Length: 105
Image (tube, rainbow, N blue to C red; front, side):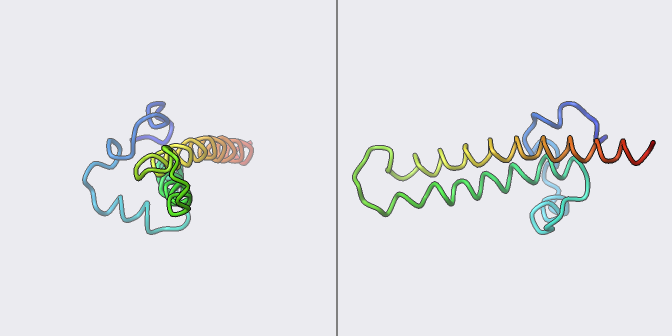
């Protein structure tokens, strides 16, 4: 699939890579994404995991608030991390495209 395909900005990682273990390992094991598709998939996936981890922090504080129950704060953290990482991946791809465009001239 081409790096410039417009649907890559909105589809989940599973529809791009499917069940290819090699692609999943490349995305999650490498620290530096190789192409635009890797950036678009890698940053939001890592953002969701990191957001879920940060979302789990208030659970053991035992304030007995309704939002502190098991899946709620982890889910909100994962969604927030995913959204922040989506914005970051869009920015990274835009900067990368601009730098590549400048190099061609």
